[in-house]
Length: 319
Image 1 (cartoon, rainbow, N blue to C red):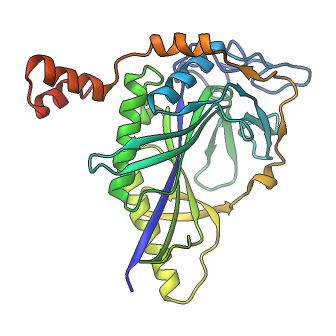
Image 2 (image 1 turned 90 degrees about the vertical axis):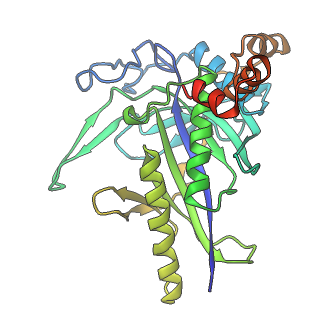
């Protein structure tokens, strides 16, 4: 039997702001652990978040670059969970009214990968596990760094398509001035939702999620490995468990982290400390007017104005 792989991506990009999304701590990469922190991003009792205006502008710019509809009134929600990478035990995100919806990215083949939504949220801290698993260290410097999560529809059917989508998305965000997308620093990370099904079947199979892939090579290898693992389970008459898995670069394999949560597990409710974001037509027109020239537009202009071959135009706009 031949199988088809179905892939959807949740891509997190760190926005190019100087300060965090709800406080004035710096967003710069590095620094001694737990030095870029304050009572707000540490979630100490009695603190109140204040929304970073620049983070909203960059998120709108990202949505416009991907052809999204901008939600005129959006709001934040609390996503409750018990992991220690956010000390306050919840993440401020957007579930019910995300900022941007219904965009797309077009691959070189002409295939359109639909973007379901882009929503704003705060990043979590970094957990460093000891080799013997006896203890875990927590660095909260990244807590509260502004993120834009870009959620695709399950439109990709191969590792190659997924990597091309990531490359196109990185180019789009860089040229829009939204993020530096330095994967080696974690400012672009991808969660991969993957299932397999017999060719010709329309019903989706049971999916797994692989967390925090931060290189194109790792994403490609993880997709191929997880696809092969699921096919092997099906052919051996075993069930695929919906779960979150982590990619082990050294073993070239995924392993289970935890059962996959659904929205109800996070007990979402509207964030009471942040009022809704109301974007006027005048504000959106201003962001559109200031939008930088994107890579595809630049390549087309170079070819039209200077008669450059497609290859040369592509080389000049590679960065």
